[in-house]
Length: 207
Image (cartoon, rainbow, N blue to C red; front, side, top):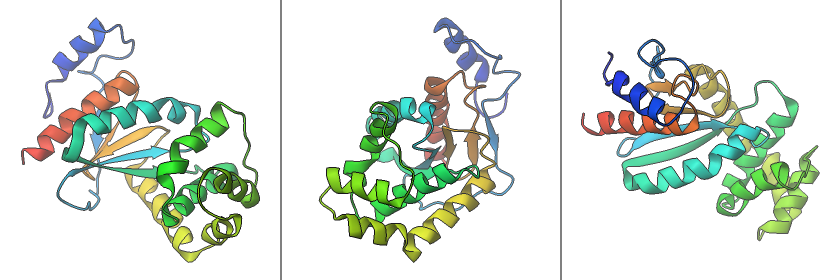
């Protein structure tokens, strides 16, 4: 076994009725060839997601509850991915525009809900601006300016580089400490992915 007792983890997942490969054969994370720098202090947990991904919509409340339970042991960083899709590229810029406008606390969950529960579509910047202006104390023009800003452009490019550095194969995905990317299938699903993340966080905290 490498670093963690994955046989025990596999047994626990089996008791929970999780189907999938045995973790002793399919390690639930891989180490990055080139570790990425993090902010230091708390252990960084990086979520790779898209607002357009239904699995990410399902994962969002689970991740939020887990992060709250972990407290100041972790620093959660959200990284939107595009996988070359224009619609996802717009949503990635929407995330960073909300960050730049300091309204993420209002818009993050609401954007997931708008797409996956209310059937709302975001075809262009105007759609994003209208939605943000509806739910947050911000004007449509301010949102449009943010979407077109150098700051958002730089953040989006940085996110693409991070996705490439981690070798993200799909979403949602979770990286830990700039060193590991967890395989959701080998981990036995989204709950298993967070179990593995918690164990990696414990290891990193004890260094």
